[in-house]
Image (cartoon, rainbow, N blue to C red):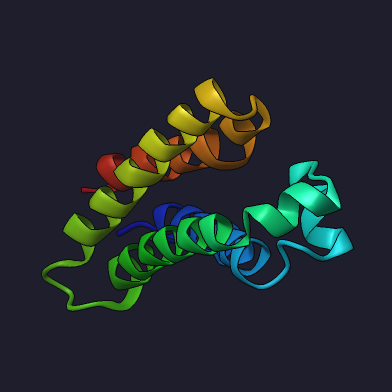
Length: 120
């Protein structure tokens, strides 16, 4: 794996760690509500849903971390799988929730995926 691919993959993983924290721990706080443009009432009503989304983002982080530091002969597969999931989730989120997700999730994931594929 090239240094560029590793750095981009790590940055995508860090973005998703932040998403996990926002969705699982900060959803109803002013910071969490501001990040997602939520009213206090809606945030309270959707806390469990947000935590579930956060858990799924945690699985993406796990795949990306395994892509960086997992067994050497499986790193590429974990990185490509994790980044592919990030891109698909980002495209879906951009189409259904907010265009901002395209720039926060899908584009960085696609750049990291391209770097991974080019470094193979």
